[in-house]
Amino acid sequence: MAPAPPPPPRKLPLLEPGSAFYWTSGAEGALRIQRCTACGTYQHPPFPHCAACGSEDVAPAAVSGKGRLATYTINYEPWIPGLPVPFVFGVVELAEQRELYVFTNVLAPVDQVRHGMAVAVTFEPHEDVWLPMFRPEDAPA
Amino acid sequence: MTDLPEKLTCITGAGQSEVGRPSSRTALQLTADACLQAIADAGLKVSDIDGVATYPGKSAEGGGIAPVSPAEAAAVLGIDPRWILASGEGFSHMAPIFNAITAIACGLARHVVIFRTVAQATARLASRQSTLMAGERNARIEGNNAWTVPFNALSPINTFALYAQAYFDKYGATSEQLGAIAVNSRRNAAHNPNAIYRKPLSLEDYLASRVISSPLRLFDCDSHIDGSTAIVVSHRDAASDLRNPPLHIEAMGMAMGGLWVGKFAGDFTHLAADKAGAMLWSRTDLTPGDVDCAQIYDGFSIHVWLWLEALGMVGRGEAAAFVEGGRRIAIDGELPLNTGGGQLSAGRFHGYGHIHEATVQLWGRGGGRQVQDARTCLISNGGYGYGAMLLRRD
Image 1: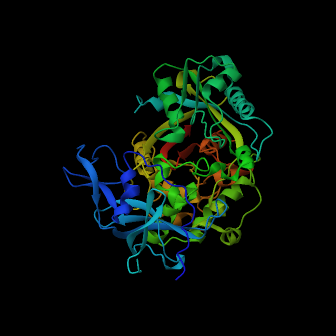
Image 2: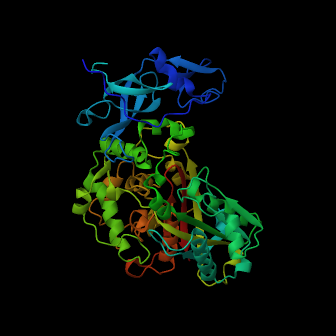
Image 3: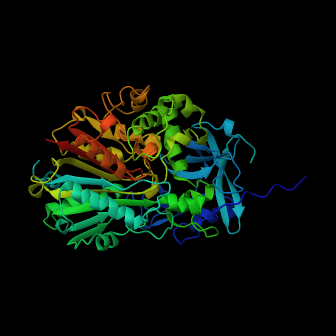
């Protein structure tokens, strides 16, 4: 079997102290989202304290990696040379909490993408970053 | 409501430089052109101006989004300011205007010139990537952009397309309905000598244009320009004997929130601009039915729908049907909209073109695009932070 094609070139996120965990969680195979230990609320992007209760006792917590596609767009414009188009840029509402959103690419044929479709996380490794991507939940991992 | 700061202030003059793609004049020259025109329009001398403000303040990003600081403008114009401000944060584009209003109401300044200068056309000639979100070519992405750019959402259109698709899905809106915004703007731009796109655009042309980021097409996007726009805001007591009838700032509203500034709340079919609309109407006895014309932010066409609903001009989910066919939003319709062509056809002044056009209408300078007997104009501004103003002429 031929090796999988290399992932497309991307601008990678800087691993910053407050958010690096999000980009490296894929090394252990699980998506992690900041959660308040005091009140249990998840929040993303991560902040130094919980916006719901004010506690500073916030920490990354593993989540199911499942959710639904809240909205999306199919980008057709090759903004930079070599950018593979079309691709799906979307917002996933994670199953753990209402309006807990993450931005991502949906790895599915563009004609099969639908509002509300069930999706699951998959990781695309680059250097020291594991980009959390999502695929249709009923598609093979 | 006479104690509200905006009731103590008025717009007394307006100016706009040439608008080029690109312009042969430098950003500083364009700034001086617009500011001097606005000051003269008000019937003031440069020495009367004691405050200078701009959005967003000089930026080192290199894409021409903010090439001139207020201090530079003051120096070039020969203004000796008591009060000076640049603001790119919070409710964004209108922040310098609202801050000037409060400065005037507090007695810190009497006549403030506020300008918006862009040199994005010149920057774009040097690099097509100048207006992308990606930054330096091989650098890692930090801050807010890190949540989107790694997924190749390289243009602001990608984030606003998320709203447009959500709106289409929730309300069953169509491209034919959204296209009414671009078609209306182009029809009005034909009567605006300073508009960059004046060739007629039909709905068929719109529907045949290429999709950039679905459901948004080429003609749903505003366009980069070189140019400068300025207004003079004055204390009410210093405005009555000037050259133009004062344009009263009847009410203002501001809010922030949404994709750019952190956590997102909602279902992507409305903006935090809702709060700016509610604030505006809480500060006036006028109602949406009193609005004679509207200059509504159109960085992308979808903003117009979301803002019309945020301002209470139509109900939630009603904007698409309201604009369909374009009759209601035409110059002689019930709500003449973006009468100078908006940003879609007149270029990206980040809302300052809308403010300028409001003065054109209220001072009866619209020529072929003049709204008959326009006495009130509603203006909204911004796609990430939100500002709105209601102007009224006696």
